[in-house]
Image (cartoon, rainbow, N blue to C red; front, side, top):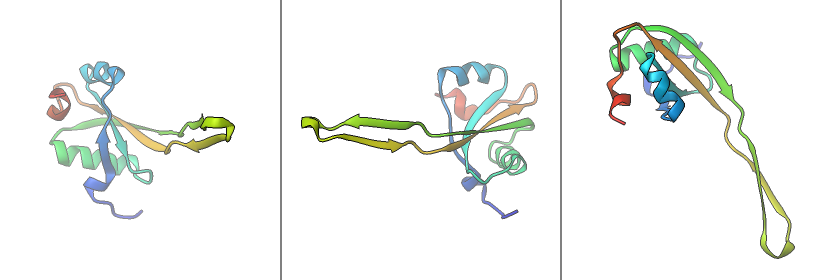
Length: 103
């Protein structure tokens, strides 16, 4: 297991309508490094935000394929979005991450 810095483990928070509902239940979502495991994610969240983590659930989101047509019948361009790994972090009752609350 390679040692990773906390800044390398957590890439950015995910802020969507569904995640704002989960925040009320004490669950926060982050985009994390693809090779980060649950223990590293737990340590990074606990140290950066000074909270106690109850559980960490991870999921890999496969990038969608996109295509578009080019003018004047010259064909089609296809590509793929990046694949990302997300982590849903559940905190103990009474714990909050204030960074999310400001958005």
